[in-house]
Amino acid sequence: MNLRDMLPPHHAYLADTHEVHNTGSELVDYNMYREDRALVEAVHREGAGWADASLADFGRLTGSADYMELGALANRHAPELDTHDRFGRRVDLVRFHPAYHQLMRTAIEHGLHASPWTDPGPGAHVARAAHYYLQTQVEAGHGCPLTMTFASVPALQTTPALAAAWVPRITAREYDPRNVPDAAKPGVTIGMAMTEKQGGSDVRANTTRAYPAGTATGPGAAYELVGHKYFVSAPMCDAFLVLAQTPGGLSCFLLPRWRPDGTKNPMQVLRLKRKMGNVSNASSETELRGALAWMVGEEGRGVRTIIEMVAMTRYDCMIGSSAGQRMAVSLALHHCARRSAFGQVLNQQPLMQNVLADLVLEQEGSLALTMRMARALDHRTDPHEDALVRLVTAVGKYWICKRTPQHAYEAMECIGGSGVMEDSPFPRLYREAPVNAIWEGSGNVQCLDVLRAMQKSPAVVGAFFDELGKARGGNTLLDRAVSALKAEFADLADLEYRARQVVDRMALTIQAALLVQHAPTAVADAFCASRLDGTADRQYGTLPRGVDCRFIIDRATPQV
Image 1 (spheres, rainbow, N blue to C red):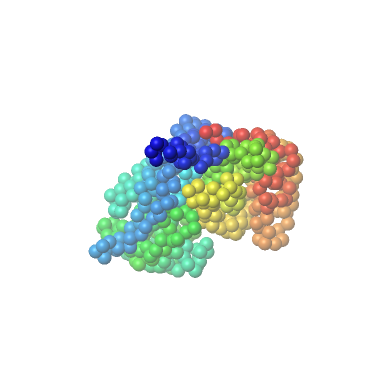
Image 2: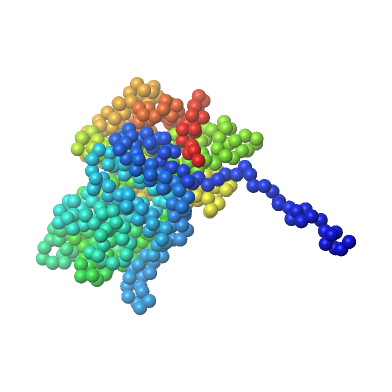
């Protein structure tokens, strides 16, 4: 017998250490629209049932593994800035990963940047919001230039000559990322450059100055801008709406990256911001060194000119944060339907059911309010709907965006240790979660805007309570909460000091009213029982007894 014959069988010393089982799986290759019952119901309820087939096709795309990977790649490979070319010429060029461009191209081809302007009509904003909600679940950062482009149209329409030259290309469904003059492009994107170091949200403290570039002044006239801008997101946009001081006060301007003669406009990018989240989207500091721009709207009325743009961008923050909540809870539901612990599948265990159902309730409330506001945007000629836009956009932006970080964390905890790993979607979701709460006006700014809207147009308060009145009698807890809220409005002492408390209650009551009217009874009653008892700051997973957690979980779980 030789030595080979004396060796043990091959499998005996090269044995596998273990079998991989009882683990999660990627949530991919599913119809992101069809598997979201609350979204489908909202689309039909709020007037965009005609878009159902288109949304189903889009949901199949956004839920595919290949498309999901684009979102991961766009964040794994951050934008890079070249201030000069290799010959020393100033270029201010930001380079993005191809995945970012593909996301932008798909979004623009589907009209996420402009569809309500090019195809207005019943449900236009609702359909656009639903598409945006699906797209943002894949990747949030590229939503910034989409939103700014979308929101620029109302501001530009205050100056017909500028609107005629720019809006057709802004609304075109063609994405052209080339670093060339806008005149050479069939489609363009628009950014914003407002805030400065010393002012932040207080844009009236801006020091950037505008000097007439010719003899004409006023709307549509050319100026040269000198100053700095501390936050300029998406600096590769083709033009920017900028605030600058004139003798008549703070005014709004449209500033292109290239001058009409084909030379580079001196809007110089100093550096890209190193953000904790929103990695795919380049944000920058810039200096304006005599940059050519054209006045938009009336001189000295820059804030008023741009306020409709801000309303649109704040609304998109609601969509984006609601989408982040949906992706987070979808991942948690998917995982907990597959993993067992202590001899039982996680979503069958009572305490985990409490957590999961609570996360679903938060997300359904956010979505219901977001889509209701889309319907209001579709009917701005109706005084009631217009009043809701003016008041409740700030309420929703404040509440939904502020609730999202804790929601993301709690959903991540449902996954356990693997959810913290960088190859999981959760670190990106978690880092992204605070962004919308801070951008476009932080929490205090939103609360002050709510008070300002009430003081400037007292009728908005009546419209708000009329909206709540549509659910009267549907839930006793809600009726009590509305009565208590009315008492808060009757006492105007220290209202600014109490603003967050008041706006919290406004957000919860209107979410509850919408769910009582439209959601299944199990969802609406659980929301009211858990959120209208004065403990809105409680932990997730503390739902009261009697909640039908199984129904709430099954309704929201993607079937993959």
